Length: 118
Length: 113
Image (cartoon, rainbow over all chains, first blue to last red; front, side):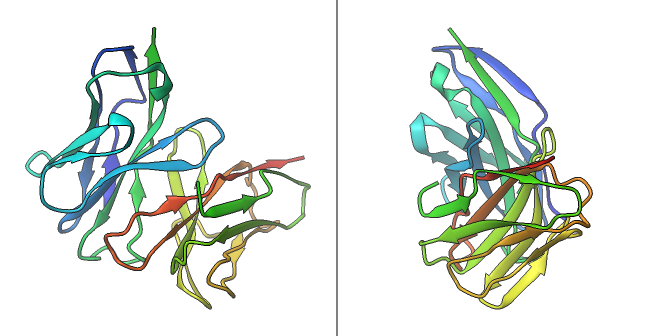
């Protein structure tokens, strides 16, 4: 089975400060890892993914994430937060070898609400 | 959201009624998915389809049905057997390569009258 944990329901940060949204995962085999963002009453928007190679992945809107295999983590980061970054963020995992079966399905965390204040 | 459309944006269901949510994609993606989103629970997979005329149950398929008669379309029916249908429903699609990203539609909010 595969699973994702986002240990913080909410993260508060001041505009201009760096932000981190945490994600740890469990998967059989090697992972593909994804971050999505959701604004109220909207679908999920893709931010970035880790497939292979460089452990630091850069994505949309200045976000980046670092894959750490030993800690099974994939934390989302941004050097300087904006009020417009306030949204719900989801981490997701898929096993690379398809060991979980089921259409290479994604397993999502429960989401972290990010609030950026002036 | 681009390339995947869901309709309607809001849908109201009466007791004992079946309702159908539409999902269409113009991305030429082979795989399509339906998720249910409830507050604090993340996304849960209802059904998925990897090819036309084939689909598989996800984690919470009871009370739902789907069809995949065309590559572009994957409608979801919420049947009267689904006793707690109030949720935000998200459709997604993905190309067939395992590395590919899953993209989401804008969602349909289903409410019970």
